Image 1 (cartoon, rainbow, N blue to C red):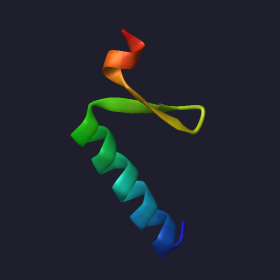
Image 2: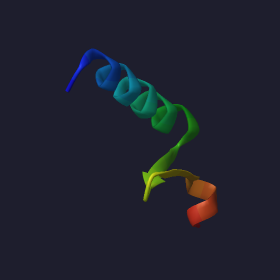
Image 3: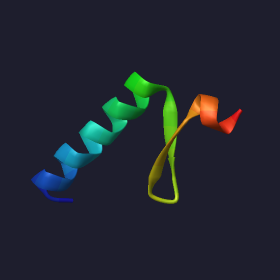
Length: 35
């Protein structure tokens, strides 16, 4: 994993924590959309 991938993963992890959702098949789904 190169530095750019690490940065992207960090942003993805933060976005998931901030928005309370998850990545499904490459797209972000908020938890309220899953309910």
